[in-house]
Length: 117
Image 1 (cartoon, rainbow, N blue to C red):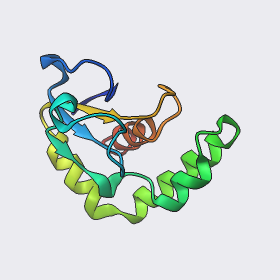
Image 2: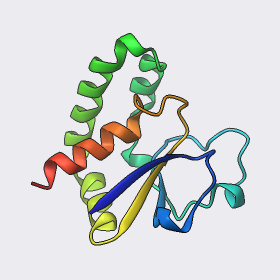
Image 3: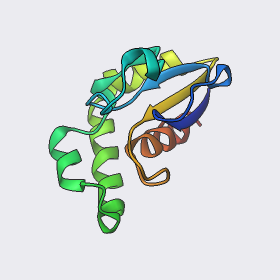
């Protein structure tokens, strides 16, 4: 499993492999054609309550990670479905957040990579 991360507003590339949007909401101002998304997995993203609580406030980042990991552990069917999609291929998790280090796609990638060992 090789997972990359990329903002949905960056230019898609063949090297992205399978492009999976891991956001609950469709990115603002972007058509489906421009996004070049192969799969949209809304159910793997943070709950609306968690997303709204976090609000991309950096001081909430450690607690956001903890809460999102707890949601992922409680959402085993969606996690296993995503793991199956990612098996034996290059995958790019596509996200909308401006912060390239503190976003739910980064937490999801780390969660999946930690669980595969």
